[in-house]
Amino acid sequence: MCLAVPLKLVSVSGKEGVGEFDGVRRKVRLDFVPKAAEGDYVIVHAGFAIETMEAAQAEESRQAFREVTDAL
Image 1 (cartoon, rainbow, N blue to C red):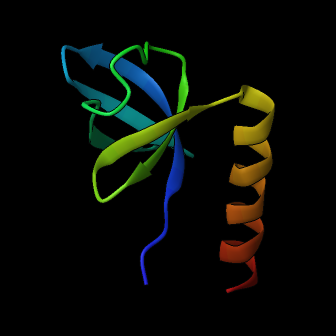
Image 2: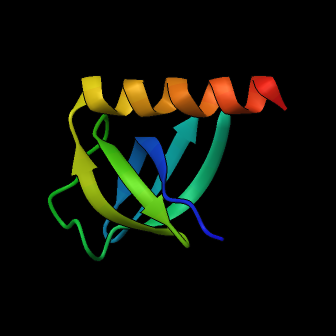
Image 3: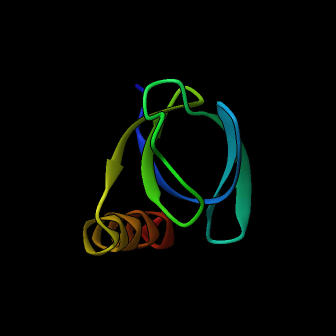
């Protein structure tokens, strides 16, 4: 099973970026969201940003991830 994870872009360079979630940073390909910019929130699946999202929606999703990991 694979999950798409909401990350905040902390840097962007061409078609590559770095996304962050709770201090964990991952390289992200931006081929599918060419207008994504530093500070945007993106949904990442298999290393590719597949969609941008509003900050409020991203924070709601990120909180849900925190609740699940805290329960484990």
